[in-house]
Length: 227
Image (spheres, one colour):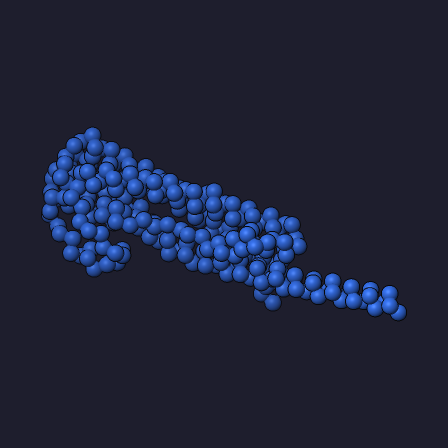
């Protein structure tokens, strides 16, 4: 009888630990899914702004660099340039749950190795392809700003893209303080390169969005989250 009682106690404790572990696992998975859904929503807004910036870059680059002394051409260039000079558009991954899984031992409660592998690969793509390419885009944005301040008398930046101060930026005002053709060509080169990095950045964000949708579907199916 004593042996049976000890055995039953051991089995009961093992069952309790399994239940607690399964509850923790489901909690982490649900939290991860919510983070990924937030990523998808954030990406939609970020990519809308990025595509707007790309359109402004294209419009600015269509103006020949040799025509920038003409006040009308300069005016048109500047009112396109100011949009992608004034702001950047970056994606910030919602990775709180993933950080907990890594730093707080959360992966230890996930009992399926294929789930761990899928989550790790998903996050690796975000870091290596999305976040890393975002840094390249920002690096060339910084180079544009540094060179532009040598060539133009730039006004104060409005705080947001939709700020009403944009409507108060004067027209037919000479913003260029220097007409150094080699530097102006360098500015155009930097804009083209920054545009290229942003185009690739957007393509990786789009791939991440597709990965996110597949990851949600996979976790929903694996853990029956929709039931």
